[in-house]
Image (tube, rainbow, N blue to C red):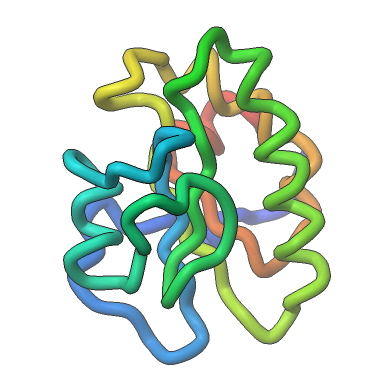
Length: 132
C-alpha cells in the first residue's frame, strides 16, 4: 500500500486531548480501569468505573483481558463501526492489549485491518508497521 499514514499515528504519550479527540484504551470487562492506559482514561479522559466496553467521557474502552486474542476481535469491530458513525471525532488508539494484558503488536495489530481505510482512526506506529 502506497498511502501515507504518517498523519494517523497515535502519539506515544497522550496527556491532553482536543475537544474532538477520543482516547481509545484497552480495558477489562469489569471496567476496573486500575492500571496502564485504562487508569489514564479514568483519571483524565472520563472513563467510568464499572464500564469496560464502549464510549465514556472522552474515551472509548476495548476489552482485552477476557481471554485469547480472538475474544478481542468483536470489540475492535464494534469500535471501528462506532468510529465510522462518528466522523467528526478523531480516535487515538493506544497499543491496546500490549501492556497488562500481555499481547504483542503482532497479536493485536491485525485486528485493526478494517481500520486502515477509516480516516478518523489513528493507530500506534507499532501497529502501522505490521499493517502496511
